[in-house]
Amino acid sequence: MREVLKITNLSKSYGRIKAVRELSLTVFHGQVLGLLGPNGSGKTTTLSMILDVVKADAGQYEWFGGVPVTMARKRIGTLLEKPNFYPYLSAVKNLEITCRIKEKGENRINDVLKQVGLFQRRNSKVKGFSTGMKQRLAIAASLVSDPDVLILDEPTNGLDPNGIADIRSLIRDIATNGKTIILASHLLDEVEKVCTDVAVMKNGKLLELRTLRGSELDRVRVIELSAGSEMDLLKILEDQDGLRIIQSLNSMLVVETKKSPQEINRILAEQGIYLTHLRERRKTLEEQFLELTNQ
Ligand SMILES: Nc1ncnc2c1ncn2[C@@H]1O[C@H](COP(=O)(O)OP(=O)(O)OP(=O)(O)O)[C@@H](O)[C@H]1O
Ligand SMILES: [Mg+2]
Image 1 (cartoon, rainbow, N blue to C red):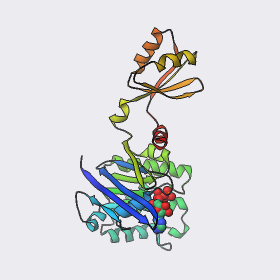
Image 2: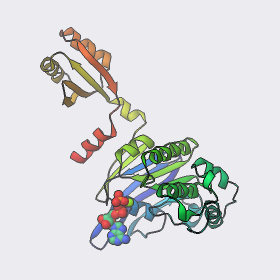
Image 3: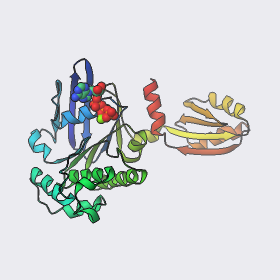
Image 4: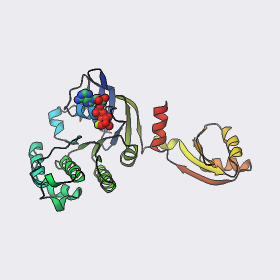
């Protein structure tokens, strides 16, 4: 897989606050990487450093295998926290300015305005745009130069539920067109819905990096079960090797195991236990996240 970004031991302090501590991470072509962490965990600081907006105290980062940052920047579309537009200019005029700054042609402006659902309002002044419309325009601005990489910091901030759903499906569309995306969010649900990989941050540190789509997750199965008597079920399952009970809720057990559901069903039936519910599912990101932060 092609490396898009390689971060090595990147650190940044603000006075006594260690905003980012020795962060190392590699992003590959086609990934949608979620930087997930609570408020103040260092996500925006990390993005600012790799875009050369904030200077790192220590460590390095390398774009596209070592392209100088000024060159790399032309291949990166960004949406950082507060998008700035000229309020008295229209959406189209603002995007024309973006194109000039990026030194790219203006031929994509109408397409991206359609993509983000602002085409009808393309000639309205940005001053009169709602928060959600400004956010859409910001995404349009990040896309207009047809970048290879998109960096989005909390892209659904301030949007209504429809806007959130629209932007998320837009991000997924962009990803299927082969772009690499790095997205910072404090919303688990958002990362789970949009990303292929997740980097969990806390207090400036990278706690864990894992894939959400790959085979790695599929190796350990999560199976839900229930039967008439939970006690009998528990007794038998507790004796099984390579099986861990992760939750017991309202007479339903959730177990983590490498055994197949068929195998578990057979073992239980042999002991005279017949299941009323048996379902295999992916481990939710919430379960993974709780595991991590409880460690
Ligand atoms: N310009 C600054 N001056 C002083 N401290 C800062 C500055 N920028 C960030 N920090 C501090 O660095 C830490 C990390 O902040 P950062 O904005 O990177 O977090 P974040 O993960 O993006 O949070 P959020 O989810 O709230 O956007 C916080 O403790 C913050 O107060
Ligand atoms: Mg932030």
